[in-house]
Amino acid sequence: MTLNSQVISLRPFIQETLRRSRISWYTLQMALFYLLRIKHKIATLEVEITDNKSDPAACGRRMFLASLIIASKYLQERNYANSAWSKICGLSVTDINEIERRFLILIDYNLFIKDNIFNNWTNVLKSHICPFSGLE
Image (cartoon, rainbow, N blue to C red):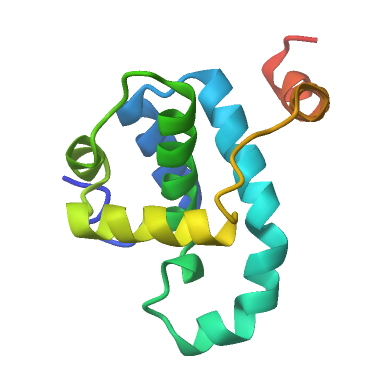
């Protein structure tokens, strides 16, 4: 069964995508930061997106997936081809290419994160995760 065979809620989609892709914690942190970067653009596009259901920006699952793919490609010398991501999530390679392009446009191709900003981001994530994980 692929992730795409039926519409599943966001949480199980994220869990299954992370399990199948075996993405690193560092890559996930970067992907989450990228999502934060595009959040304001998604909010300003909300009316347009509502009218255009085919826009990948209208789907949280697709934007999450795009952020993982882009973070992985940015950080890793060797990473999955879009055909592998297609098998991981069940979308076609054409769809993977489309969501990747859309995400890059939303983020203005700005993938670099300054060290101090990323360090602050990791501290924010730790402060939210550690209480639930017992790692304090």
